[in-house]
Length: 333
Image 1 (tube, rainbow, N blue to C red):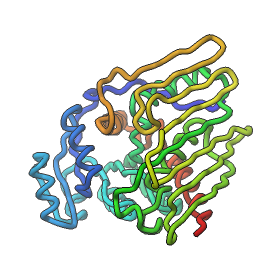
Image 2 (image 1 turned 30 degrees about the vertical axis):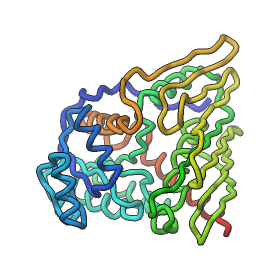
Image 3 (image 1 turned 120 degrees about the horizontal axis):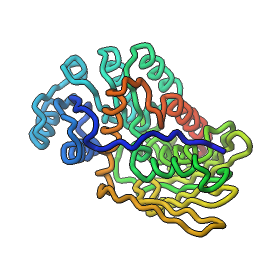
């Protein structure tokens, strides 16, 4: 059986407040700061952009006291944590600067656009003794915390097969950049599906992918993954249109189906010989408000003296990056 790490529940306001600096005042940063300010005690103390005007506009919107027009100025400030929310291709560079300055770092997914860069960042974090965490925020919401707990307790027996579909119609022009510049469906949307597969059946030992590409940009992919002991997973992802977000895990004793959407879950249902059991997230946070959970988790881990996430480690992030590398190599015109 694939045993998912189980950790004590982390309350949104349990951990001591840290001073956060935001690198890249885009849409995801706005969602993150909005929910962190409303639902946690964490303090957003600074924001940086290559554009002073953008940093100042973001600072005024969210009452962030310090604004900078360079990322170096941000990492040299008195923040405790840097949240890297810039475009994908810049994640590792900014994160490495923060690590070198002794800051903890929450890096938007994907951690890196290549496995080599993911390893480089992981090695730097370990050497510096700081916590670097990939912002796969779905792993920290109550649904997946509880699902991991129930899987470890044998709710479906031995997980043997997982399947997931994820994707949205692409509105962001940057998605049409080549993957080397951080674009494409795999790095933006497929990462969620590939993460779920890894969560459900373990790190893959074999990956096979069929990938559609337009001018070198991956637009759709169907991926088959095999983990140790023959466990299997399938992932379908596309940027052509919205998908159902269906996600399920089939085991020897039952099946777990995520309720609503793999990325925006409201709970899950386990069905088996003993009947049907439904678990619902009663936290009151839905949609992107769930981004607050990863901030609370990071702050709790720092307070505990951890230098790696106990539920999605740097080794997990590197394995995910390795899988994405293999998928992207399968691109066809």
